[in-house]
Length: 98
Image (cartoon, rainbow, N blue to C red; front, top):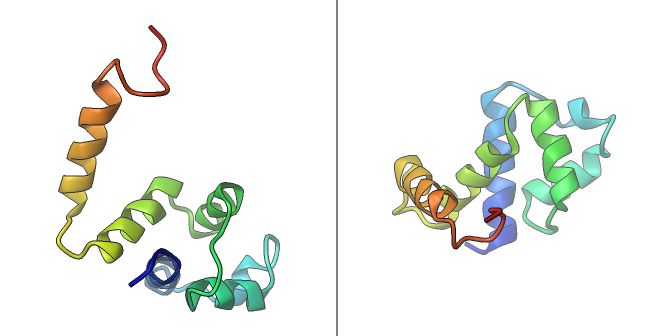
């Protein structure tokens, strides 16, 4: 499964799991665009991921973690969190001030 398809599946699962219709995203996107994302035909921008997560009442990282778990079925949320923790606590990583 490619990245667009994996994100689309993550979005669809989150939306359906929260019993939200595609029309509920009307303030940020058209139903057609949401359908296009869910079918894996387009990739959203970071700003759009934030807006989608807001409608879903989720943290954007929840959508991204779900994406990675779908893209790599062997990974778990604990694997992803462990990798994040390791990378974010290492002062050599980008985004940390010295």
